[in-house]
Amino acid sequence: MRLGVHLVNFTLPGGPEAIGPTLAATGRAAEEAGVDNLSFMDHYFQLEFLSGVDDPMLEGYTALGFLAAHTTSVELQLLMTGVTYRHPGLLAKIVSTLDVLSGGRAALGIGAAWYEREHRALGVPFPPLAERFERLEETLQVVRQMWSTDDGPFDGKHYQLAETLNSPQPLRQPRPPIMVGGGGEKKTLRLVARYADACNVFAASGAGPDEVAHKLAVLRDWCEREGRPYDEIRRTVLYNGLVGQDAAGAATFVEEMRALADVGVDEVHVMPLRGDPVAFVRSLGDHVVPALSPL
Image (cartoon, rainbow, N blue to C red; front, side):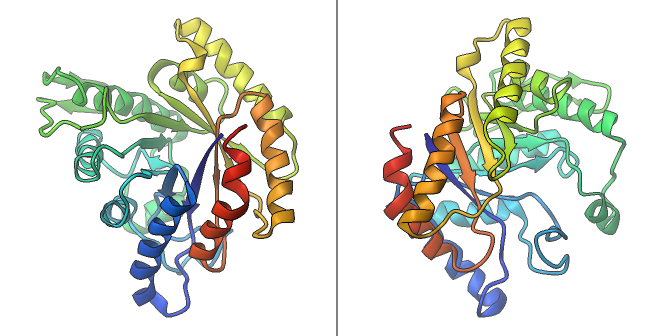
């Protein structure tokens, strides 16, 4: 099972001046620990249920560019890009740039967006949910076209591009992988089956694997309808629990992951919700990575 670290807390001792050095050290620690993926959220404001809304929050792709300069092998992405935050042509260009400058390590994680407060606050349009899903599907189409040899126009309901020229193209072949986030059974998982290389569903601590197994069964059904091999899709989860930083806590976490591996999950993303992210990542290397890799 692959392991990702999802960085969500930027309230650090030392204030904003400490954020850059801490992230650089976290990137180095992640590679030393054998972590496969590093990600940030895509938000303008800190989440109210995690911390204070006025606590520090970084712009995601700028932060990934910084990490690219302080790492050499780990995969880099947002978990998840909100479809409303960037025009799809610009989004494809941004991820292409990250991929080229990181030596082919970018991935695109994308979802329908949900945090209305930050949209309203900064004047970013926040259309109804049905329209956001329409825009998500068109964005997936635009990105895939821009990462291909087709540089012609795109004429959708919400987006019209006269040219889909994208130079330089990403280094990663055949293109950066696309991950669609969420477990919606009528729309989200259909989009995964039709356009994506990975899904990402929520795995609550202690909830057991049944809900995840159900979502993956729905995804399998959509793959059959779309004529898509189910095993082509990486099945990932975002884990919301605390991972113990000692051997006992890590063992408990690995057993939870063993149950998810048994129902088809092959990648988990964990969050250092508070404290020192460098120490958290080092503890993963000591206690989690060796036990998780064989699953």
